[in-house]
Amino acid sequence: MRNVAPTRSLTRRANQWKSIAFLAGALGGFALAVGILMNVIPLVGVNDPSFGVYSFLRAAAEFVGIVLLAVSAGMLIRAFTWRMDNDLAQQTAQVLGQKLDDRYTLIRNVSKREIGYIDAVLVGPAGVLVFRITDAEGDWANEGVNWLVRNNSGDLLPAPFNPTKECQIDMDRLGEFLRGRGVHDAPVLGVVVFTRDDRRVRLSARDSVIPISHLHLLPVNLGSFYLNAERMNMNAVTQVIQQLYDV
Image (cartoon, rainbow, N blue to C red; front, top):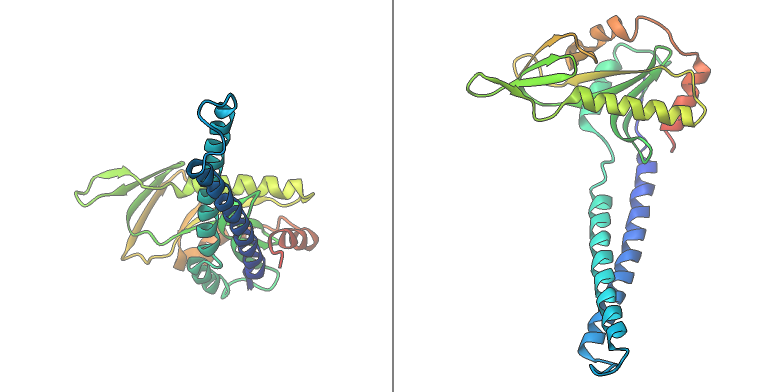
């Protein structure tokens, strides 16, 4: 199995965000400075008929400056914290690499504007498999699309997040993205993976909408719903990889 991540593509995108952020910050600083200067050195008297327009322009300059500076700060934070890889996806790749041949490619850390962020996507003759990977611990129960987790008192309460719904959203977005790029013969499946072992996370499931698995059991469990059929030809496999792994 090939194990890849579009690191260079993500680095380019982060650098683009930094450039835009610095430009927005420069414009914001200039606008705010103009607004402050108009406050400190009034160019129009209070009794002047155009003082209302002057006051509006002064306030607008300050407002636009503050907004642009805030946007710049947000973009810089996003750029400098951009995830270049996913350790949980790397763990998953190490486990799957013992099972799958070179017809399969695991793309870690998929991040595109049209799709959002996906932990990992496995592409091969069996189809396109979307991973939602978590290192959460505890006693988890899945029924349909719903998740419960047992608290310290032993009560089952709604889980703090819903990996099934998150995975389904990723699947829907990815399917729409591929169809929009002309890839129509790519069935999209999904799986929720818990990386902790049986001692640290217990799983129970009934009528799961999306399959769930412990990481160490994943190679076996994939045989029941993913590796049980070949759904794509290698031409379609190559197309999907090209769309997701743009170096």
